[in-house]
Length: 255
Ligand SMILES: [Zn+2]
Image 1: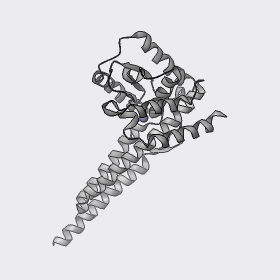
Image 2: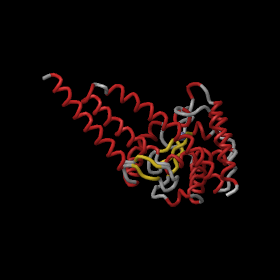
Image 3: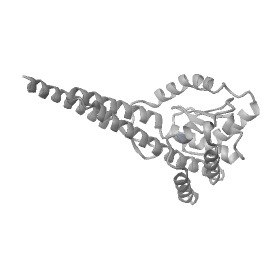
Image 4: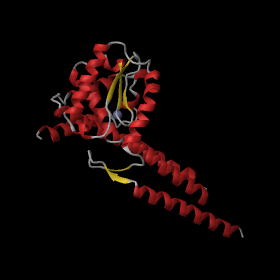
């Protein structure tokens, strides 16, 4: 009687797992702007809505918008120049660039759909307009690469498998462990893809792509509690990143 019960549970577990595997297959799509296959469970309009909804809260967490309208205008100009001269212009996303007042946290980040932020702490460390283009280009890369939407779809998938595992054989913990690793690995790949896209956008807009390396040096030097959470947390080691940026410059400069 007990083994019959176990078999039944196992079957249900397998059925749930298969459901999520098939669901994931149906959610695989090629990103038309990067050419990369990814798992996506929401449309561009949903990404834009999520970004717009979370933007005020994100700004508030960093002391709100910076009051200097000249600085904000520079951020707008550089951001729009990158968008208007690249493939980013052809995407359905609504790009908006915000300079945040935060004087302590050296950070820049993007919400899905095109809301992009840079703190004044990072802004003030930049040495030239090209480096600002490097930071914003990297963030545009996260939007166009649909990294948040992909992360959401992947975590739905792993949560589904974890459910199947816990029903079938009490192995939910193991499966969700694998899931977390996968998410972190994606994070590193996201950063490298955004660096590469950033270099591409910089070249298209007439900026010096080598200044992306300058940005990396600034991030590397920003140690301690002011470390960059978005641009450094899940990152491959900085030297490896600089190497990849050099490769991207070689790859795109001749085009
Ligand atoms: Zn990033």
